[in-house]
Length: 227
Image (cartoon, rainbow, N blue to C red):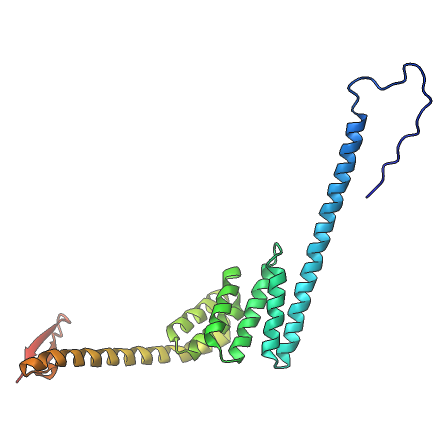
């Protein structure tokens, strides 16, 4: 802080006192307060820069650990970076990258639900983050959430129409999703058949006594009873 040197005192002479209402002292105090506030603001900015460097250093260390296959240790470093970065303004880039990097650690560890959660946190901060969309899609596929995986691949293609990885994934996922839907449909029909048989059995009948016939003109069905 700059020190304001006092003016040398003049020899006292008659009538040399400051006139009433002088603002010299007030102005000096105001100038000193302004300098102190400037110093405080500068210190805060320096502290923010230091914290950002620390967050990036932790993230970089996490990247090294990930490359070495030490996924749990990498997770800890990314968490440290997040703890620092979340206290900073305009640190969404660091936070989203750390969430996405934590997601790929969980992916490597086979913790697919955690992968999805971390990717979603990254995408909340950066909705067009392609790596996070890709990793979340991979985790959904591992869990056989094919429709959700397809939605993520389509989001990637909307942002980057030339993304070949997303296109290949989409080509592979769509038949899997259709197969799963058909399987679920068959399972549902089997359950309904079992339920119908449990009710109709009381009357000596089963669902096999009923046949659904589709009208080719209207597409509607009629039910016929067969003994």
